[in-house]
Length: 367
Image (cartoon, rainbow, N blue to C red; front, side, top):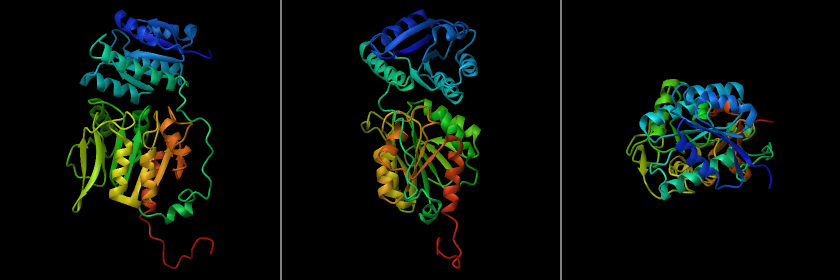
């Protein structure tokens, strides 16, 4: 057997530590490095137990999860940390704050305690995330060549010739809240197009994320709701557990929210949002795929690309997990690959560029 992923479990509840240990013990590729019942104890174990991943409880007495996370980030900036929280409004707000503060991902504690069905669902989700963050997931693309300069839309000349952008659709998952906090606040208050986001999260996490991004941004960020008009300068996040699409009704473009079956185990689904965006906006759509596990968004990127729209992806180096953007790159569907620190300005620049008119007297490039 190769390298086993070493996990440090941090939870003030002895029962919770036992449940987590039992769950992780079902996977031969994972090893329990240690358990700690306080933030201070966890910090003292970082060096001697050398974990590959930390599972960190949100609500702990004394040094809580947020304080512990901040210190872990100071000591070990790149150590993956998965927050473990309850599915409550308060728990979701604190968890989103942790994700914005550098936590890699999160899991919600199963409501049914040791009941078989919720525990099995929790087990599958947790193991998948540990393998992805511990570099044990085959879905993470590691070495993909840059797109060729001849790729339409990649060169400045080709990009300038593309239709103007009238909507930005973003698909994102693992590492998403922090990435969105890098992008959305860099869009100006007069941003001239709507932004639609699918972030893989359950309710009420998406509401907490929208509120947090609004406080950080010049644009208003809101959870999507059925019938909402899609207007320039407004950011909509698909509500957790619901698909979000767009539809044209007369002169209006509106949101459609539904609970149809998950697509690739995802609800909301970036594929479904992108497919509807391609149908409504055609060549005027910009699709952006950022950090996240799996392949959600690849098929949707194909719809936008086929309609003549543009596709940007986050680069591997700045992605927490390069599954979603890497899948789009592997399929050859992207036009630009952008580090997260520049994504906001690149999106803004592309939108502005499509609104600039070339003077009639200017000769074609290369003439």
